[in-house]
Length: 167
Image 1 (cartoon, rainbow, N blue to C red):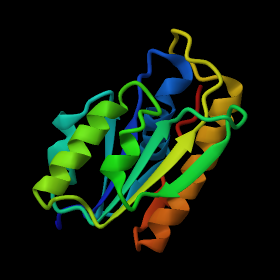
Image 2: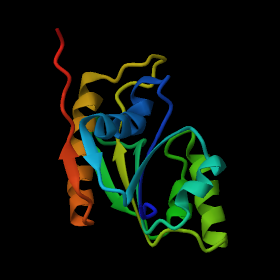
Image 3: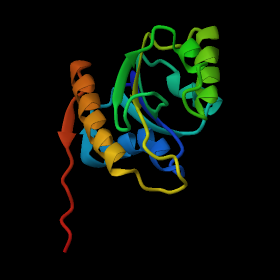
Image 4: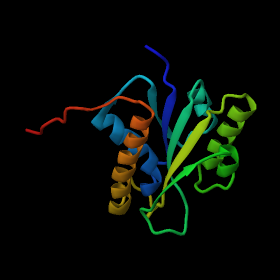
């Protein structure tokens, strides 16, 4: 079994409604699909430097997170991050200072992956609660399909899991 070279990292605080959208994408993908060994999925929650070891030997990182923006809630923004540590210095969500630190440390130790992309979702509500708004839940579905497409382009084999039938 070879080491994963692709990391799909969902970040966010699941206790603050739509802020947990990145984590929900990772959960959805792992629940519905099986993936070949070159991809690793991580629920990064609100962790920062603790995630540094997740970057070891990765060539591609896909980060999914709720981001602040002027666009309507549920808007999806995909960005290729040429300078990821600097990008996250702008603090577009509360936990991203930790991401900036992690990526800066990775850059200093030459362990920063060559390709980092970010899927950002504009939240509708950051109220305390475990549920996503309908708007952001729909965006989670869309991002999941886009991440699947990205992974297939990178050569990841994907198979649907059998869905359990309720009695």
